[in-house]
Amino acid sequence: MDIFNKAKELATAIVQSQELKALRENEENMMNNPTSRQLIEEYQKIQMEVMQEGIEIQDLSEDKQLEIEKIEKEMSQNQYIVDYMEAQEKFEQILRSVNLIISSALNESDSTCSSTGCSGCDGC
Image (tube, rainbow, N blue to C red):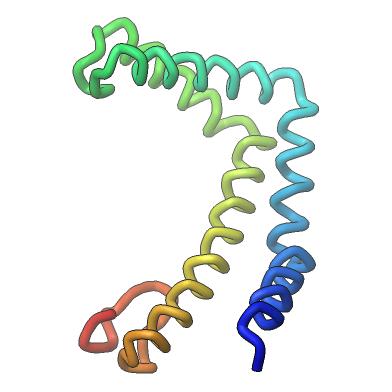
């Protein structure tokens, strides 16, 4: 059993997964929609400003916080963005599950752990 060959097989399986295909399709749809793209760009601009200022979001001015809330509300009502976020969550769940399987094997953890956490075992 060659570890690198198995890793390549896993990578191929992930690339061919419906979850990644859906994620890429939804990302393309979102970025091709002018309204969605503008919302994403506005949100990213604010995030960059916050990072450059080195402050926490809760420490922003009330006006800036209201602006963020407004954009987040618009994003949550934009179907292209919602579809993308849902697809992203499903894909990330696949990656978390794969990581949990590998971690469990390395740590010889209880095999009853689920991909949603360790509530059914002694911990990871």
